[in-house]
Amino acid sequence: MLTADFDFILPEELIAQNPSDARDSSRLLVLHRRKNQIEHRNFRDVIQFLHGGDLLVLNDSKVFPARLRAVNPATGGTFEILLVQENARNDWWAMMRPAKRARVGSKLVLVDLRGEQTDLHASVIETNEEGHRRLQFQRAATVSPASAKEFNVADFLDHYGEVPLPPYIRREVGNSSAQDRARYQTVYAKESGSIAAPTAGLHFTEELLAELRARKIEICHITLHVGLGTFAPVKTERVEEHTMHWEQFHVNESAAQKINLAKAEGRRVVAVGTTSVRVLETLADQNNGKIVPGPGRTNIFIYPPYQFRIVDALITNFHLPRSTLLMLVSAFAAPGEIRGREMLLAAYAEAVRLPYRFFSYGDAMLIT
Image (cartoon, rainbow, N blue to C red; front, side):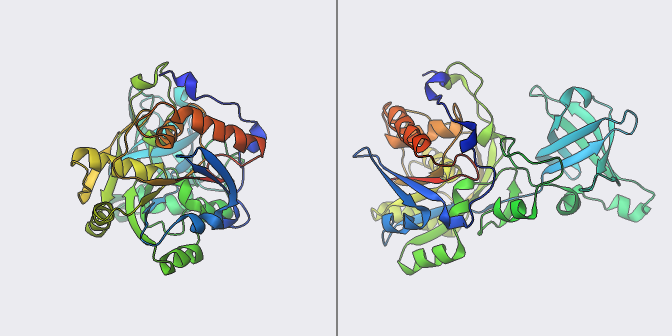
């Protein structure tokens, strides 16, 4: 299957630059996949398509302020840093722009949200095949020898870091807003570790979740920390040749029991977001259809045709052309078949025509 088969034309003005006025006021496209029929609703109407006994699975990973700014005092050059993986305390792999000027041996000084230099330093100590830089962080000993020794850059991210908004959401440098800090995060976010939001969950409010529980719709939480594996572009000509990055997840005992019981009793498992899908299907593949609690990691790549073992319905956002997320959702539109791609792209064409808002701050889709 060709990567180009998952391309579509999206007018730039449909890429949502800001969240909707209220989380649950976004629009909802409902795709009834067995009938290949579409309904157009408001997100709050999702409650009409969920039934007592359904199990809603939410990813409770929390986005941390992973974007930093730095300057090379020797040259005056400025850098953007996106932390992507912690190796050890004060030791991180990062994406940097401009990467070519971030050479091994470079000594950088972090700047705060006002652009002022701080006492936090970063040294480029290694590069990898993907062009990422390994950074060693430290604090100037002039602050005090004790505080420099106990320093952990993770403790400073809330103060110096920015919301790691995706590049298609345009903001001035250093100008992610208080609204972004609040809205680029689910209301149930708990476990810090993601560099991008599990965006399907952004539409839920505490009130809507309470109403779902009142209607006997069960809810459980799993954790997948969203990293490069979720949104790295597919650069290969053929879909099958793409390799996903590894991402960390954790499923607690309670969630595993609820999911296994729902499947045993023939109740629907409704995944909120592609990240939830990837955790559930990874564990099912590894454990003969069962969900086993504990930590794990996944680089599962789902594309048509794929036969899902756990997930019965999916709430998701509208995804980028040629992306692994679009491929996963295409597979879910017609499990075990190739035709899901045509069904999904036809639904996207309708969403463009109406027009819906796309990507992270955009509208939602329910496939049932």
